[in-house]
Image 1 (tube, rainbow, N blue to C red):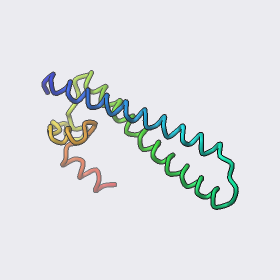
Image 2 (cartoon, rainbow, N blue to C red):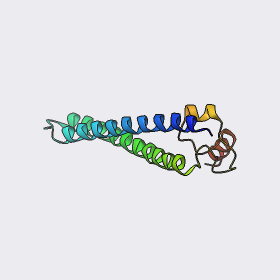
Image 3 (cartoon, helix red, strand yellow):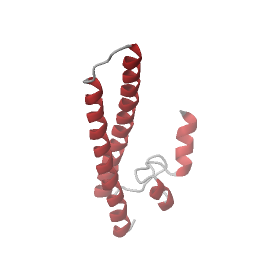
Image 4 (cartoon, helix red, strand yellow):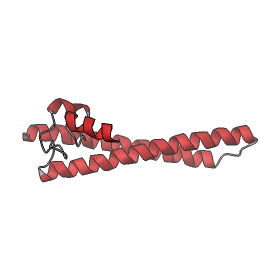
Length: 116
């Protein structure tokens, strides 16, 4: 992969990383506000609990994506970026444009999904 392409993907990944960190901080602030609210009845408690569970799930998913992005940024630094972890063939440019932190080519991703 050319240096200009690596720079392109590095910028996309860094931008997404910044956005995820902002999202996580925002959700954590919202969770802190929810926990500090005075609840008047069971309906308020149920609603508060439901909102907390949803926001916690969002944070968990975003943390997972953040880990994947950090691994991918390491691969860019090491020169291993864009190589499928299963078949070791190059991951297509168009696939990386859609999911810059992809670790599998399209064919291998389908195999992994079918085996889950």
